[in-house]
Image: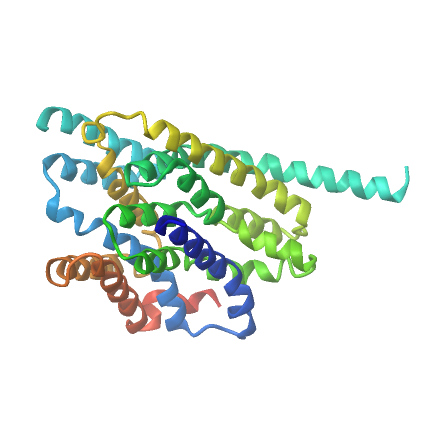
Length: 98
Length: 242
């Protein structure tokens, strides 16, 4: 079996643990400490930010334009519209800047 | 009409009621399923692997993170850890929905947790809060179409992705950062969002420059989460929900 296959299996098990784990573990506690809850709340934004930020170091004008437009579009629309706006700017800018 | 047919009829109608509610989710997730398949192939997955990941992991953002890191040749265990970290929010959904579905048979519960995605939790929790029972038939009607379409569309996206000749001109290589930025912006109403994002961004850039990839992911994430833990609780707004 390939490494990819094992990554998928382990990723699936890890994901299932998060989906059943709250029921099995957290619901046994009467209440969660506010600091722990604040930390849990911060997890998705913290992880996802680390996937964007270093890209800024290698980004050219086309990539910067796309990210700025995505951020601005997010103030208005949902995930799909901001994604399409960012992608459209990226493709147009790459055609002209290269 | 016997009591048995009555129950069967109401189960079927519960199921179809769930299916109707699933349609907006099916439509909204379709482009991301196709995108996932296409990007998975672009990052070195086979069509079968893209299909398997959608069928077994079944979590959009974490699948995107997985293929992004896979494309950067990050160590396998770190890819799995990152998938786990992105999906960690489900722990809260699971704790919340647990009391709504505690009356189901254990096997149904086990299946129910497998399809517990963000929209599945949101819609089911809304039904529970309106005072209605969250039954298994209704829950399955809500979740099954989303699952089936997600898996099929991922496979189609992977097949289609193999046909794209010039991925740079079409910006395929930079679609994931745009998508991730979109997700980050989607969390902006949460307490402490800006400080967490700034802390994670700075820490991940510094780590990327010094320690190097892939450690910037873990280091950046830990910095943001630690900041949220350290700041006084009245800033994080969690105690107001009591």
